[in-house]
Image 1 (cartoon, rainbow, N blue to C red):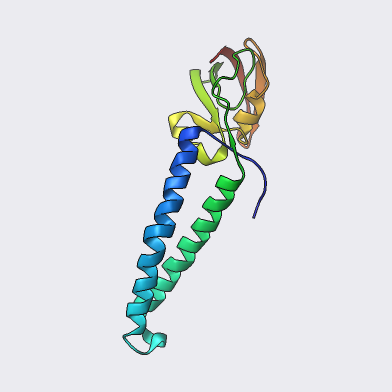
Image 2: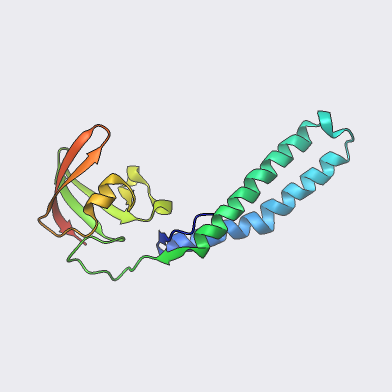
Length: 154
């Protein structure tokens, strides 16, 4: 598994822990019971219930491993960061080709671009990190270059 840091808010980390707890304490035993029940039906080669349960078990075990790695490598975002430069956790108002926009820079696990929450690893996030109010940045994306001017950092 990847050992790179997972930048995450306190709330985001708590959500990951809750999901892990649900997977381990509820979903895993539920699937084990489904597999046991399916085995009771006899021939496993023609048993769709057994196959479905085994596939779901593989998914759940994979998700458990993923969640454990994310939590192990979690680096909490400093909620008291300064406003002098863009950092993970900053909300940045920019003026760009589509007018004024606002982005909150978050770790990749919490990114929701449609909600204005962009990953620190995204082209826009990487271009904004470390910049100051008034800076102009050019973001290289597959469709071409996009120019932004930083108006506010909070």
